[in-house]
Length: 151
Image (cartoon, rainbow, N blue to C red; front, side, top):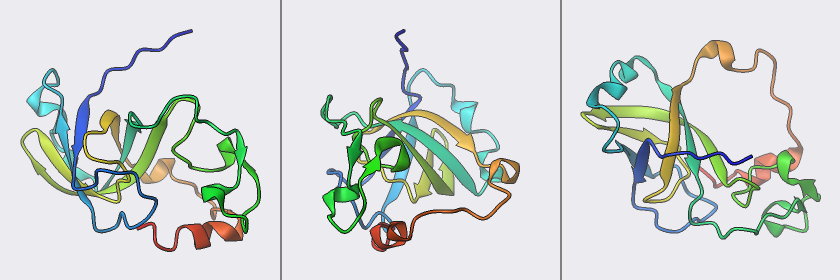
């Protein structure tokens, strides 16, 4: 089965390469695609966080490693691709929960988005408290080490 998706927006920011760390200072502008109506962002400022679904269009295809050590670090265990958030994924889809900072016409400003300049956005959804986990999140100890300088 083939699935065809069309971007609803593009990311505009200062990051031109997919470095693994220091995304916290990056403010990204998300600009609606030409065929999306101006009012698609109506009432978006009613929400503090959004989920941005995007396509890793700069990742070379067929680079997926289904089992690997996160960032190739020998101190981390070998993990299956679905037990990590690496960009080299079977379908090259990214997902970030971001903070909404501003809305101006056909664009919004967000922080905490780990997508580089020009990245196509597939969808934008508001974060509802009711969709968040109601229990404490469990994760391996090494994740905190990996994420120390990410944001």
